[in-house]
Figure (cartoon, rainbow, N blue to C red):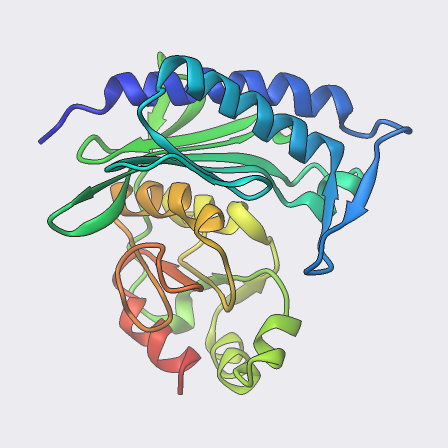
Length: 264
């Protein structure tokens, strides 16, 4: 198996650089916010963070391709960096600290294009999570100060904690009935939202989560972290990985039940 630890260390450097910039503009009174064609907000910090990451990648990994939320695809090849400069922009622009920079490296192999490195950095929460394929998933302040993560062992939906982002997405796709049926059956449900739900699945504090519509940059880093923590990450169609346009993540024990109920 290839060794991706140099790439992981570099991803941490990229996250450090982005964190410095995004925290400097967090809660800034003069923060500029625009509306994208899909009616979602984008701030000057989103664009600046992605530009900063891209410039570092160009210098250190010039042969690798890049896909980012704000500036699209650049380059070609078997290795591709996937960037979401600020996952949770709506929180960011309102001063809510639940947002993060998501950085993943994917590599094309026999199993297709799959994430092999993932870093999720949430500086306003003072948290960071990461994983490298075959090397486990960790959380901590740095590579040298880290705790390995494992998913929970909850095996019954009635005992499970289920996390989600919003109700509207499920309703828009005609899937609200299944979502509500699952929610009523769980021990606990909470709308933590965005990256945080997946990181809590990886940590074992939440047992399953799902979202009905996502882009690759929303999922790539989360996917490898959940899987390396011992969980499962698929689309709602059951396809492994972050390529279905939506996501379901769990401790593995609950995954088939999670998919069955949401798609019933």
